[in-house]
Image (cartoon, rainbow, N blue to C red; front, top):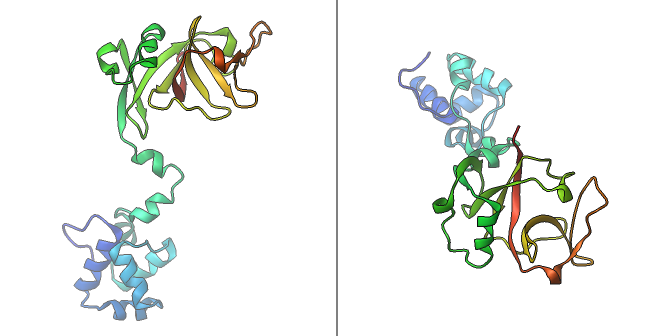
Length: 216
């Protein structure tokens, strides 16, 4: 028995089908060999029945299995997916600015990077204090090949050991790996010509890198 205008969730479809069959939760539970609280949990979206149990439900409720299983999964079941947290993040358009312009954020984090944008890149993230810059630096070419675009969180200027950060130095802005012991900014290069920079020599940490994208 397929019902017109069905609820969107699996639990809602179970409930509506059960009521259409004039069954209580306890009646349905007895038919399929589970407890009444199990049926209540399915209907309220606490969790979803597995595929085999869905088949038994469909048979007991005289309902097509594909219709019953076609509802939206519960929030808990969706959260079990490896990419659930990522998928829930809002897509935002991160402004791409020049490396030179990025130096402004070393002294003023209240600047709106959108007013400086040369282009945009869509990114999902849990923060909106972001801008992106292109890197073409031999000193970090093993981590960021030429034409890499990196997204910087300019509200995060406290890098942890091993993080990559965008720092302002007397020679200008550059991306390096933060090292705690000793406190240095380290290169990661195919060339031996680049040395670590002592943290005392940098002017400021502009922000930590959130993601890198290779532009082909």
